[in-house]
Length: 143
Image (cartoon, rainbow, N blue to C red; front, side, top):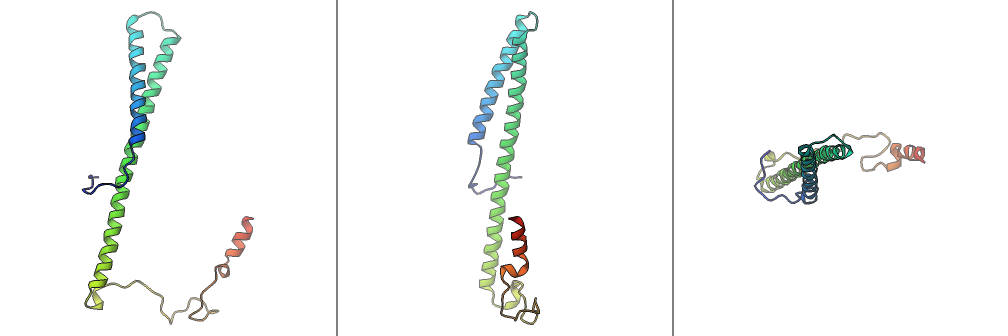
């Protein structure tokens, strides 16, 4: 996805970038330590195991945190673009409704006509209460 032209209102990453960099520094330290132990030679001991485990663990943690940060940034960019599109759509619909000279240019919102009544028990102007639709039974079962 291309970067938007307008500034993105929320761009996560400062804290995530800190942890990715921190994991990278620790991984680099462990890899250097493991390299020094390997160059010095000698039999493999517990120190070698600790250096290798630390190198692998911090490298994987850095990769996972980096992927998570990239996904958050991408999601923030998509969310901002979606919000812009919704604002543009609503603004264009509002402007088209206000500037329409004829009623045929604007599609009206669907409404229920007066002749189509949803319930035979109510009149055309009466509303259904919340508890008339069976909500009381569902609420009582949760208790």
